[in-house]
Amino acid sequence: MGFFELLHIPKPEDVQNSKNTRFLPFISGNIENRNDDGLHAKNLREKIEEVAGIEIKGHLLFTGLTEAITNVSHHAYKSHNSRKSRWWMSGAFDKIQNEVIVSFYDHGLTIPKTLPSSKYFEKIREWFRFWSDSEKIKAAMKYGRTSTGELARGKGLQDFLAIIRAYPNSELKIYSRKGLLMVRNVPSLGAGKLKFTCKDFEISLRGTLIEWRFSPLQKDS
Image (cartoon, rainbow, N blue to C red; front, side):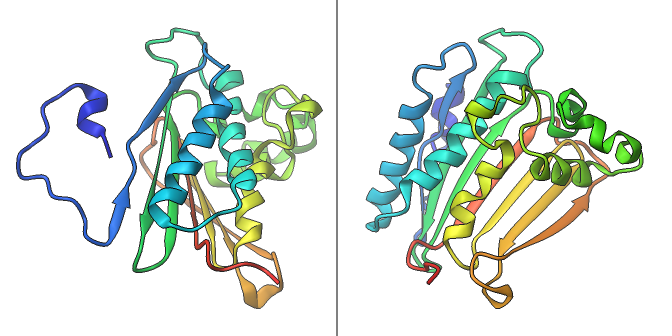
């Protein structure tokens, strides 16, 4: 995945490639250089299609990835130190499962931490202190944008669901601070219906990790 190259450290000689899964190199950016956000998302989509040999609904993946970058740029970091204010994303294709996996990570302020800055916070203030981190992530998704409230910038975390709604049995996972929100497209519930599951951990991730899993060959009717 280009991890050793990204950190500028020697690659061990005994590292072997998986026979079933093709991993793509990491892509990294910082919040000060927003001009290439769309290009990064497009390049990752094209590389996934190349290794998978299948066309995916790229505009939906593009929506999720650009929203993730937008969220980082607006509120994930207190300072705009370009050395520290970075994000990373990568992808993989499992040819046995016919599954695409796309991951995005930043180590800035988490979704539960930034939710109080939302313009929707007044609606949930009464229950906020009783909620776990995973429930706060779910609330952020329900009420849309987590920080600025600018309608022109899309629907916030709802944009992460675009490609999940498009492919049956697909799954979105959002790890942020101590919480994990899992969203799965379950065909038995009806076309495009989603199942939400919350889980919490004792140790904080100290950042936010977003993972999409979907099969390009499966499409809702």
